[in-house]
Length: 197
Image (cartoon, rainbow, N blue to C red; front, side, top):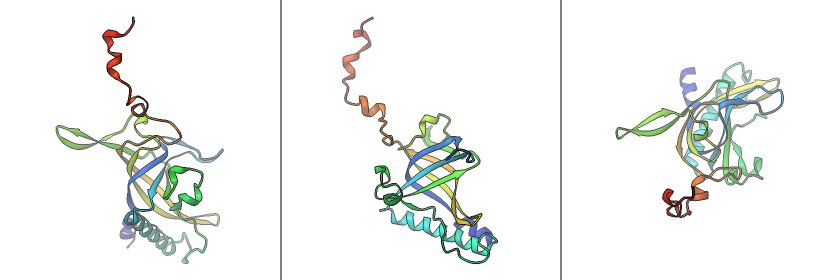
């Protein structure tokens, strides 16, 4: 039974927008806090199918907590939900408008991959350049939901497993891409033969 329950608590969340990417170097969220790998996953509220799948996995984690010593056999009344409302909890950040979000973390480094064509076939390759994964790009994130009870603070956590980058996106936080800045520049005007020495 536990094996089946653990399977239902794991979800591939995607395609979603990624923010606050700390996938190569762990960071602490506050002074003195433990450093962890993390990513904020932004999910459009219009993606009803994915949201339902996430809620089902969270419910499975709740049931796991009740069945184990974590919640001591009863459903907690005030528990922290990892699926948060961007319109409420991130009202000052337009990237989270009309979206849900999940902050997923891990003590161990997640696998980070992207799709490339090799000999005409799509293959997954490890991302080694940190700049390939940035706040604003899109991907699929493997998350495992789990119950916790720390000194009376109960809830469902979101464990970060792996990340698959699927598409580029506009940078969040005001930074623009080189394509955006220079896409309309007449490159022929800068032919190397005409450049001053």
